[in-house]
Image 1 (spheres, helix red, strand yellow):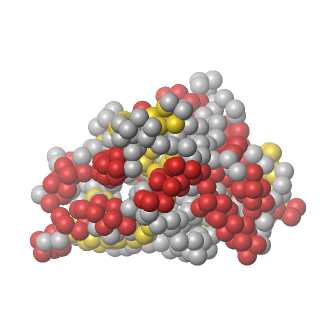
Image 2: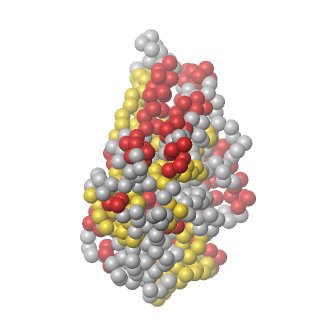
Image 3: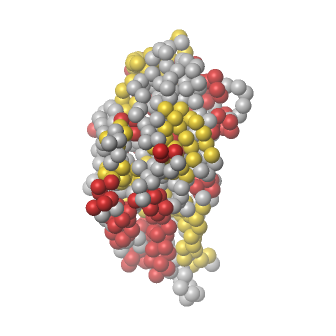
Length: 526
């Protein structure tokens, strides 16, 4: 997802999908339309934490290093090479010469230094990004094409964090205007293979091929991202031949795309990435401040039945925050079972009882009545919430439901203005849990559910400076045990990404990193 580690995990649960529409513009076969279920708040890669924005900006902006689509190894992009000095405390990057921003201005070390300083600037939004650069004390211009980062202490992910640091053009932003609200946040200028062309609010964002791009030009000349919240409408257009590519829900994959005609027209592709969805319990609220109550909530949720009913069994139940197929994941920790009786015992131990016989548990005169919030664009969360509402009512718990448009929902999370939420995280492959789980991230970071544990903090901090992979994995496994015990989330599922791609394209491949439009070829017309 572009920045490594957990940078793009926040809000990457935007549930965006991609599709192409053969409307008026599609008379040009080299135009690809991409569907976004919600509109990005900004296209500034430093302040944005949304996957819907990343889906656009990954083709506009570039970083010093990039990950190989198959091996995930870091390779040069804006930098031609780098050196690690002073026992991992100094990183020197040698920039490629002649790289142009899409407006024709040359990319230089000044852009890197400026971008780093904006990340460190307390006036610039983006707490979830800043946390990864706390120990990077300086970014210095050595000459026009050399930059050097100095670090306070070693960090096992430093190379990828510096290499994948978002970079914006100094000559565009350094004009005295507020960086957070700069007009160019809606009109990005990048060095990537596509250039920004237009943004029609709540309708579409258009990219065109960057003819100044130094590398091989993509075959597809234009990408149009359309904001369409209804996936059923998108699928209907897909089947009518008005679309090229679309991510599929489990229902669409299992029940609505299996005909011979569909398989003649489209590839169906499935692959796993570091993602999971969850139900988060806000520990700052009286209902969920007690670990016994949080565990009881997990025991009341029949995850296997939910997986089969809502997702047609397409996914794996997870027990923790790391990617289920990584070494950091603790496979020996089985998920807590569905056990309503044990849940009732835990609730009684925590002091919840129906003292007035109205069918709802109470404690100290307060009803166990809370509100679940989730984004309008998540059909899964909508259906899950209905199931949970009915099941929890049987245990004497009243759950109310509130859906919000994406921007409002994000604001609710940022302000910690919720009891419980149903969303998901899309993580980096290395998996540093600091942003999500360290107690310092409760106020402004991504620790929305106010998880606090002193031992977990110590393990997270120690793992960050542990370069021995075996010892670091052992630390993360112990961290997993703590989170498993505390249940700040009810961890739900790691679901595969699923997509339908028109067979009018050649060279469509599934990589470890996902799909890559840059290599797609439009078939010649017969």
